[in-house]
Picture 1 (cartoon, helix red, strand yellow):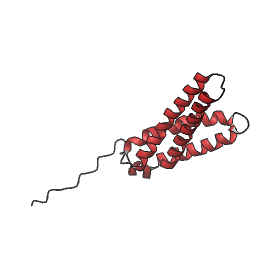
Picture 2 (cartoon, helix red, strand yellow):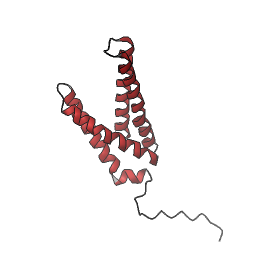
Picture 3 (tube, helix red, strand yellow):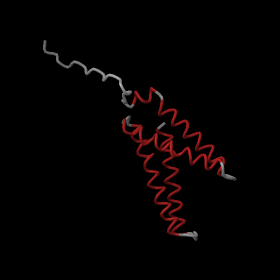
Picture 4 (tube, one colour):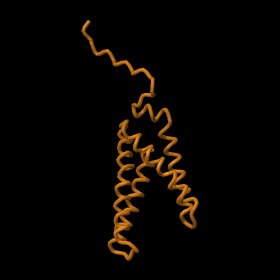
Length: 133
């Protein structure tokens, strides 16, 4: 699950770097738009990378950004699926990765491993450390 988030984050950062370089060195229609798009993709790629690191370290806060990243990826996948050419397989891959990551993030074992309590669940009792008798 952390690997899927890291994969998406890396893809966004690589795409952003490509757009930024092409905006600076290439001949885009609008260099400013290409550069801003590249910077935006890099910034958006950092979110799933930070979430992936948090998931690896079993930090409960990391589940939120990871879920949001996957939910945002689904409309992007749908748009790619409705396009033409090589974008259709990219949409299939993105949809498969997003749905798999969403499933993994929603599993009770994942929720438990991250130390997240279900709403209405009683807090776990703290261990008795008083050894004085």
